[in-house]
Image (tube, rainbow, N blue to C red; front, top):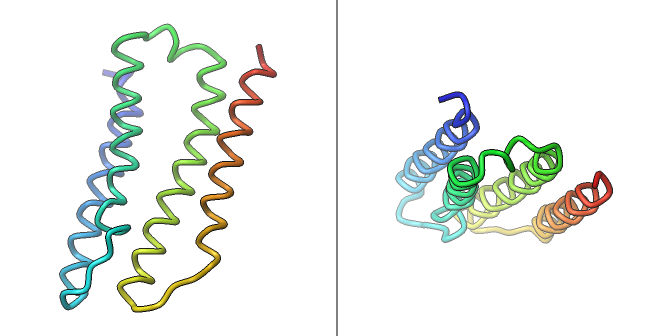
Length: 122
């Protein structure tokens, strides 16, 4: 049960974002955003990944290299989630921002940093 603690956290995040998008779309007077509608899939993908790794290869999930990559990957994932939600809110409001791209750039840099940090710790 303890080995699935992270998976339960991501399940909660997935559920929260899904309910948030339903409520936000309800009060959006018929205006919907695809980015907001599908933002819950990002934490769901992380949830599936974590369950597969812990179930199939539990030794990998406990290795320091995986934990380092997981920490950097979590930061990248949160960056993408925030970008999708903010972009969705702005689309529903009828506006946009060029600064949203910065979240995706930060996410890519965090993933690259995670890969390099994992290789460096080898």
